[in-house]
Length: 346
Image (tube, rainbow, N blue to C red; front, side):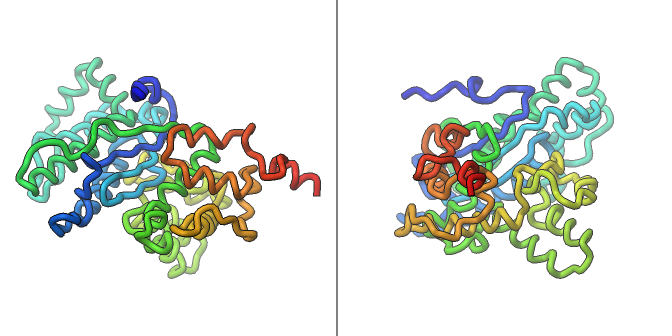
């Protein structure tokens, strides 16, 4: 079946949440341990994670979650044209320079641009308008991820050619339940693959970075300091916060150059998400697929989802149209009643 045209999936100028997947050519383990030669390419996963963090601080795009596997990359992105619209012309020019600098420092970071370069970009209204659109464009975000990693890998291997399979796969996440299910699917990739026993042991995932910051919050006593370590932590501070509307909103007023915005992505706290993630991982471990525990987290009731449907969607999220299976019309449990209606009848 022919792939859907990217223009029919992604819309410029709209806020969209998209699950993107990019696989290495022929699905080879170009970021892990090559089974044929025994050569270790694990360090390339750190390349990808660092590149994602860098781009999160340049683009008007929120990174909701990620997982860097041995032969593919998952990333959940939310385009923010509304944020980019508020940037000044100089900021647009400076951010574009940081993506494609003509000069670099010795450590490879972009050098400070000359005033003449910035003024030249700002003088052309047509070019500046195009650059403003690109800085909230998910395709450009993925391009700036893939091309750099491919060049670095080919340089290391002293070869040319493709590093990634053709285009990246993009799936729109139309509502909160789909976003939550996709976040769990992405964070649990190492667990489902049998590479890790728990989310905190899952290297190069957004869940692991959030957990490290959550543990660091226990080292401080004040509520403000705890919030800062959770939402602006050293590890996950470049990711979008989990909770959409935190109980203590003061922490959201703290600006950050590491990400496009402080907007959350789900109607649950980080602790609730991690509890849901831990429970889901226990049900979907290899050899225990589909087993439903009686101790399902209460957050599923608030999402109006049965445990069975939640596990089915998370387990099969990589398949086509999985994101649309969690709709108001399909949120039913085994008895045919919705979780919310059953709760109301008790």
